Image (cartoon, rainbow, N blue to C red; front, side, top):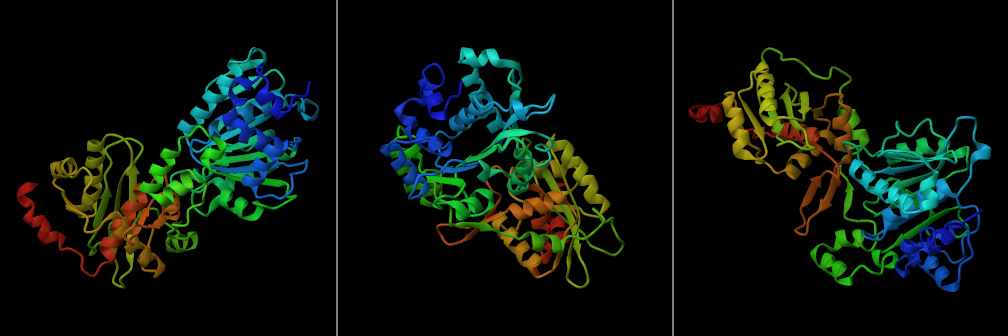
Length: 469
């Protein structure tokens, strides 16, 4: 029996107890339009308001992109679509022997993937008919007896190859970052061939962020385009979830209007731009080697970005300034784990370059200083803030006055850096939400230190600290 998406959302024997509520009326209208269902005047009005289309979408839509505010029901909608595509659409006549029609949900990180999978599993387990269809289940996959499966993944173009896809749901695609990479373009490019066999649907649901990436590009090309086969919606939080108190949005707007406009009004941010281009960073990278060993007659410097553990790396960058004024980053290393053990290793590395003092930021200054002192290496505070270090590095890279190692992680982290303007008019440089910049920060600190004509006298400063180490 064929079941439409609206029937699935409103039938109390299916998902009506959740998605049949008035608070999901806008989602029912939008998904009904995407699947080519007839809509009443009220629902059609909602669709026109969030898609800026003057005429109703026609049948045959294969892509849906929804830029929706926070707490607008994104993960619930993603879970619903995954279960609907896997359990209520039959692809068996198109499958080869042993082949499975996979509905893939791709999230920004493991935590978000687990959240979406919990919603999916809840929809399946709470329905006796669907729970009987389950053949196998674990934390990453639910396999059904109709030769379909739902899998959750994190954003990686390598992980999505080799599948026959019935549908793909891209969760929070505007925030996909993998150690500074922007994998959204690569992932979507890898997905399209896998969707071709079953003429599968591509669905992106995310809060908007900066004016870049697949979500922004799709919005720019397809939003408000009548008769376009790609349906794009831009929906503030309270349209998709009217139970969200207005005071929450008002408080957020008073605190940071630019951020709140993106998070709750679904507006792409105009105050954020990429800091460095891939062309500038790639041009600065040498072909080889990854690390240049110590050479006689050269004075070396080191900059560290300490970490007390967790998701961040503890990093060190070592380099020198050649006779022509070029800053050469000879080595960059990063590790996770015990900070004391990493400090010991980095001190040993620094000493192989004749370094007896390192620079770093003020994070955890006392324990950092103590650990380096334990290995007779002085820890000196960075002369600039993180943003100032990046701005100085940017000037050096754009002028061709810095050489970087051929490290893919450094390249990705540098290219992911964002420039935004503070309320006071200052430029702030930082990694995007959920991203990391540990190796990039160590390299930036070193380049800024060596690129300055007023480099501190480390030798005299170390002598002052000799009594402390």
